[in-house]
Image (cartoon, one colour):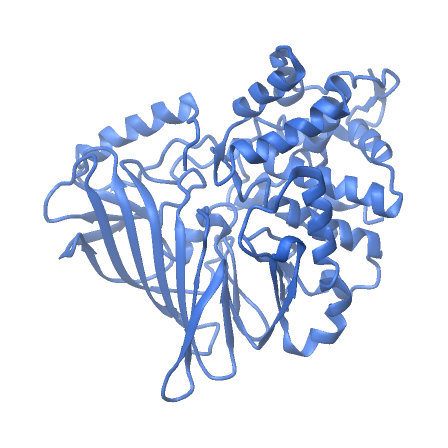
Length: 502
């Protein structure tokens, strides 16, 4: 996610086989025992994420989602939906918790039999006809509605556009759209089947499976991902849209989705994408997915979002004259970079967010340096100056503070953007350009299609440096104060009152 300049000071310079973190293992095991004991009354569970403790659910691992939506042409009315989940049980379960809120559940089946269900907190709790044990398949079908009108205290999920809907599920809002295990540590395959009235186009992550026209003019569009995906990266968009096709490096299909009325004015930006993909591939290796493209929403979102294979952009970012061309280009690269950093290599917990946003900001800034002569060193020096203030407000990069009440996207603070790109700059200064570039390529290759933690990054960086970097990272990732910058002893941070400090 990238917040636009008017929504955060951070942007105000407009100018499945991974290791599991020990803490989450313990939390998940503990929660699984609670699940197995079938507490009465039903209770919301979680896997112990430090920032979102009730997010995710223990006792099973989702393999795939098959989600059908029927849109009735009014973005203020609930969609009819069917969500099918195939999973593998990993711990004894008498009840199965799903994350789901903001929709009406009509019926539930578990392994082909009708199951009792109840809602508690933001969990949908299912009681199968018989308990399930480790190694058993879990096939769940939930028939429900999906309400696009957000509650006052809700953030994310469906977002209305002038002519339909798009999804924005970061950080924990996918369960406001469909039942799921809503945590990035449980990635899965997705199939979407979206029925919409005549005149509208529906798109989703992945590649099209085909479309079926019905009597009366409605069409069902089907899409499937070729790589596992976190729930927060799911995207379904419905509107009066045009789908544009072009070719990227190595024959990659590039698909852009834009409001039909804006096709011509947006082309000057869309045609840049193949070159931007080529630039990123030269930095970190082959693009990790089956397709890519830009989804332009005619809506006031206040952010851009790296939904997998189809990044979401608000229309205004391309049409407001105060944004210089180099800046828009770099924002496009930011969301593109996320396809490697955050989408393909996803965080194990939300405290690892700095690995997503720090890297996306790094390549955003590097692109601006190489293509628009905006020196990376200057940007990093300014980030260094402000870093102590950012840490005080949001916590250190790898130990962010809890989100503000009712504002879950407030975890997207300056410290996870430029403040975390600054950590990467310091690392490059510490180990040298060659070792740093090798690290980056290895990172996205080793952990492709999986999850990784900060500890994984520290270990890999140490291996590339040929020495233990634990102390270096402890200071830069967890310290309340910003450490001295290697190679720049003259750089100073600014105290909150504006005084220079060492």
